[in-house]
Structures are given as structure tokens and as C-alpha cells.
Image 1 (cartoon, rainbow, N blue to C red):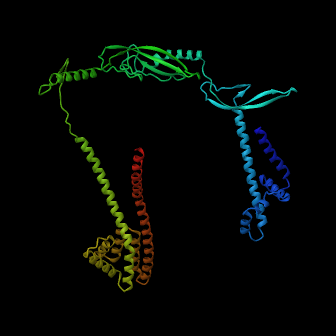
Image 2: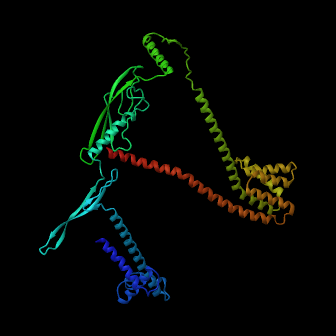
Image 3: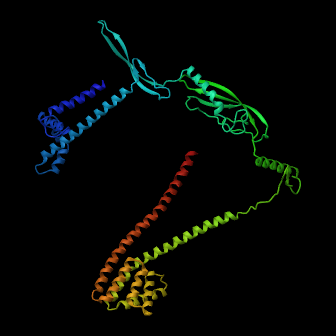
Length: 496
């Protein structure tokens, strides 16, 4: 029944496509325009009628107040109808595709439900049951009885097939479980007891007549046995198969295993004898003031030397790691000091430039300005002011000028030592002034002062953003601690 509805919808689209040949537009837009025009002509509420009853027309009149309302109203309605048509068509196509996919996966064929092959997935299906009735005139009718949802399991092996495969597995197991042992008649190393065998649908469980000697995971407990000593163990393999019937199928088979003491190399055997001799000497001398050590072991002579219990190498390695970390931390702190110096010099630059403008405007020369700035800084240091790198460099310039260094060289060295774009620019301005004279120096310095104050504002803003970022982690930690303070008491109160 569903497929007929899907077909009717597609047929309706084809009919609309055919009858809308005279309309403008393409594809669904042509059908939408046709429906809009027919709706207006027939007076139905498909477009204009709907718009008059809603706020859309009012909104369009506000957006297009100058004679464009009718055209925009049509454009809006056609677009809305077009989108609705496309959505319905897409839904119908998807419904047809879903129906076709479901039809291809249907399990009912010729009155039987087809199972998946062995190893396939279990599937489910929904069936409708009808009661067939025959009327008096011979007509046959179907009366719906009900819906039934069924689980169709994949095909299982029959009991005979499963038994035959179980015999194959039992024949394979003696070689599969050997591990590194040569045969089950001489087992000295762990066995490999599998839970499944590839290619067979069985689950294998293992039982042992002595779990102390051979555990269910294949571990062999022969450490306490002497070399050449042997003990018998019976392993039982239990195969189980779920054939879809309650209880399933089970088969078992026993495998005799002979466990021998561990095979030791000459060195391991000597170590074992030495340990036994030490234990025997300890037992004999437990009430004495000293424990004698064995010095003769059959054909071997022993020499004993005590290992120091010191941690010298560990301390040496630890000290090397600490030294490396300390050097890295010192380098990091040094770099941080350099960064702080450059940042402080950048912040001091606008103030230094403004003083240059002030003193140059008052008639002082560049040389006198440097000397004046150096004297002011020296006075502030005497009053307890901290060290400022930019003014320290200015003091160095004053000392160079006092010692006879040419001004051009002193100013160039000043810019190089500061290693900052602003101070390099200042030294270049001062060096050019020495060559060209003082005619434009004051105006150039005023422009530089204005630019430096703008740069300082940007720097201050950047520093503020960095401070906010650094505060983010402590805030998150405080939030986590607060949540723990709230949640933990609440949890214990509920638990109580």
C-alpha cells in the first residue's frame, strides 16, 4: 500500500510539470509559480491569501514601500512553495529508496523465512497475518489477524555436523596445547590451552585433575619438583556449541599429561644447590652468633664477596639531572631578566623622549641633554630609586663623552647596546642631526615623542592581556577547589 502512495506523489509532480509548461522559471520554480497563479485565480489560500492573514505582507511592505510590494510578494510566495515542493519530493524519493532497500532485505520467500548462512547475523522482520475466508458466492477475502515481529536466527550446525567437527578439534588439541614442550608425556614448561580453535564454532573450557600442577590457563607448577621427578595429571577439554536449542551441545575428552621437574642448565642447577646449601647452613646455625657460608660445592669452589649497599651511582645520576635542570632554570631566568630589561626600557622610552623635547626646546644641546638626564638619574638613585637600564645606558654615554669619545660614536654605541628598535631610531636621529644641524631636530623629536606614547599605550594594553591570561589558570584552579568543597560534603551526606 505504501508504494502506491509514493507513486501517486511522483505522478502528481509529473502532472504539475506537464501542465506548468507555460509558466516562467525552471524545475520546481516553474511548478511553484504555476501553483501561485492558480491559487490567486481560484481564490484559494496558497500565497497571497495566506500572506494577507499573516505578518509577512506587513513585513514586505516595510521592506519595499515604493511600489515593489506586489513583485516581492510573488517572489516570496513562489520561493516558499518551491522549497516545500523540493522537500516533499526529496522525502518521497528517500521513502521509495528505503522501501526498495527493505524489499531487498525481506526474508519471506515462497512461504518460508530465509535464514543467514552459518556465522551470519541474526535478523528480525515484521509479518502481518491474514485469515482467508470464503464467501457464499465463492469470493475469497483476507481478514487481518495481527502483526508479528519475529527474530530469524542464522543457520546453526546440526548435531551430527557439530559432533563431526568436535572430533576434528579433539584430534588437533594434543599438538595445539604443547607450547614449548616436546610431548604431553614430558611437560616441563607452560602449556598453551586455547579457548577457541580458529575455523570451528566451539568454546573450549579446561579442567585439571591437579590445578597445583597444571592450572586451567596452562601454568605448570613444577618449581618444587626435583629434576627427573614426574607426576601424572589429567586435562579435560570441554567443547560447547550453542545450536539455538536450550542447553546447547557439549562434548569432553581427557588428555593424560606427565609433568616433570624443571630442566635446569648447569649454571641454574649450581645456583639452586648453592641456595639450598645456604638455607641448610642458616637452619643449622640459627642459634649461633654467625652463619657459615658454603665454600665447596661438589667440584666447585666458591668465593664470597659482599656488595656495598650504597647508592652512589643513583646519587651521581640524580646530581647530573639536578645540575642540568639548574643550568636550564638559570638560563631561563637570565633570559627573563633580558626580557624584563627590554620591556622596562620600552616603557621608559616615551618619558626619555619627552625630556629630550623639553630640554632641546629650552635651548640645551644634545650633549647637555644627555648630561642633564644622567645627573637627574644619579640624584634619584641616591634617593633610593631602583636601577633603570635605559638611564644606565645614558650614564654610560655621559662617561664616554667625558672621556673624549666622539658624539657620533657614542650615540651609535648607545643604540647598539640598547638593542631596541626605538633606541636605535633615536640614535640614528641624533647622528643625522650632528651632520645636518639642529634646524629640524626639535620637530622630529616631537613627532617621535608622539609616536612613542602611542606605542606605550599598545604595550600597556598587551601587558594587560598577558596578565589576564596568566590569571586564567589560578581562577580555574579556584573554581575546581570550590566545586570539590561543595560536591564532596554533598556526596557523603547522600551516602549517609
